[in-house]
Image (cartoon, rainbow, N blue to C red):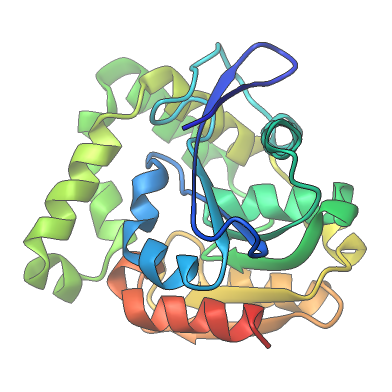
Length: 260
């Protein structure tokens, strides 16, 4: 699978699968995960799309340059991947931080985006102190210090109790994230304000929100939907990582939007 160098020398790990002549769907992960968070959707999506997954800088098998990172930098990483693969235009589905990068792309690289899915995400976090405290704790004590509270934000109590295999996989994925990568991306989220970008997005847009999401709330999803011209919203019975809590419904929701 390709390893693509960005203009500042960071290596981005990319995996591509599905029919070569199909339209492209690119997936983008949440903070503290890698491209395998989409494994449940790979089968349904590759029936219709050439699927591109990647590890964001600081995550998975990609490089971990010194932070802080910015949303613009993370967006340019995506453009470097597309240029490296020779792909002119994509559909985009990003969850949480992936949705934040998607908003930047929709506003700043509109010619590269056919349709845009912004899942379990937010345009802005007014309380910077929450991110400052989390970043400080991770720097001092590592991701082990926050993994339990993180899983509680990511999944409803009922799902955590009935899905031990998924929980074990996600804990392992989260703890494998490099501290510098988590912190660099956390700083990008803390400093983000995409509110002025939303009205500039012209691609057909679907917002996916989790009814029980405490991290990027239903209200945050509604705000994005209300400020992107013509955007629609779908609400799933899930917390933050909706594609794992409701895998079939999630795939059906994405495909229903992209194929119509």
